[in-house]
Image (cartoon, rainbow, N blue to C red):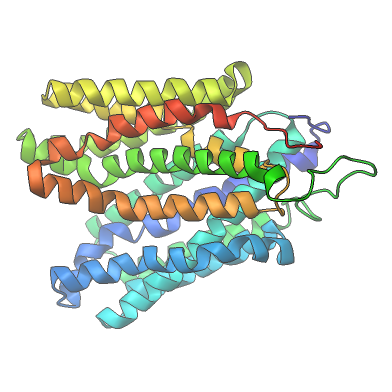
Amino acid sequence: MVGAGVDARDRRARVATAGLFLTNGAVFANLLPRLPEIKSDLHLTNTVFGAAVAAFSAGALVSGPTAGALIRRFRSSVVAVGGSVLIAAFTVAAGLAPGAATLAAALFCAGAADAVTDVAQNAHGLRVQRRYGRFIINSLHAVWSAGAVVGGLIGAGAIYLEIPRAVQLSATGALFGGLCLVAYRFLLPGPDHDPPAEGARRPAEGAGSLRPVYLALAALVGIAVGGAVIEDAGSSWATLYLRDALAAPAALAALGYVAVVGFQFAGRILGDRLADRFGQPGVARAGGLIAAAGMGVALGFPSVPVTLAGFAAAGFGSATMVPAAMHAADELPGLRAGTGLTVLTWLMRVGFFGSPLIVGAVADAVGLRVGLLTVPLAGLAVAALAGALRPIRTAGS
C-alpha cells in the first residue's frame, strides 16, 4: 500500500468519513430499544413483528447488487451521504408507522438504503486509506461500533426520560442527517479509482486469466461471512444462552453482548497497527484462532465467567475480519471499480440473514450450546482462508 503523502485535506476526509460510519452505526441503533414499544402499540403478533423486522434484511439483499453501479455513476461520497440521509428518514418513518405494512415498508427501504450506504462509505474509507498509505479501515469500523453504542444509549435514555418516540427519532434523524451533509464538503473529491497509468499492464483477457481473482473473492467472502457469523452469535444468542442455558440473571446475561461488541471495538482500535506490523493475513489468522479457542473452551466448560470470557475472545478475534476482507476485495485486479466490494458485502449480508436461521434450527433440535459451535467453526474457517488477504497477481500483471 503506497500513500501519496498525507495532507490536511486527507486528515479532514478521514474525520468526515468517520462521521459517516458513526452515523451509520447510531441511526438505526437508536430505533432498536423502541421496537418492543412499537410492537405493543401496533398490537402485532410475534410472527407479524418478526416478518416486519426481517423486511430490513430483505431490502438490503434486493438493493445490495446495485451499489457498485451507483458508486461508479455518482461517486462514493455522494452515495454514502445520500444513503445516510435516507436511512435517517426511513428510520423516522418506521418509528411513526401506523401499522404493520407501513412498518415493514419503512424498514425495507431503510435496509435497501443501508446496503448501498455500507458499500459506499467503505469504498470512500478505503480511498482515504490509500491516501494515507497505511491501514485505517479498522479504526473507521471501530467508530461504527461506537456509534451503535451511542444510538442504543440514546434510545434507552429517551425511554427512561419518557421522551416521545416521534421527538426522539426526528431529533436524532435531523442531527445525524445534518452531520452527514456537513461531512460531505470534506470528503475526497473526484473519481474513486484513478485510471490506469499509460502502459500499465492489465490482466489478460478471458475467464481463465481471472480465475485466481474469482477464487480469491470466494475466499474473501468466506472470511467476511465467518466474521458475520461470529458477530451474529453475540448480538442474537449471547444473552439468550447465558440466561437460559447457564441460568445467569438478566442483567448479567446482557453482558454477553457487551463483551462481544466491547472487545470487538478494542480489537478494531488496535487492528490498524497490528495489520501494519504483521500483515492482514497474520492478524486474521490469529483472530480466527483466538475466536475458535475462546468459544471452544467456553462451550466445553460452560459457566458464566468462562462464557463471558469466550464471547469477549470471539469479539476481539473477529474485530478485523470484515474490514480486512472488504479492503482485499476492493483491491482485486481485473474487476470493475467497486465490484469486488459490492459482491462481498452483499454475500456477507446473506450470511447475516442465514446465520440465525441455522443456529436457531440446530438449537431447537439439539440445544443452543451445540448451535453455538458455529462460532469456533467460523473462526477456524477464517484462519484457514486468511491467505486470501494477500494481494494477488493475475497473468500479465
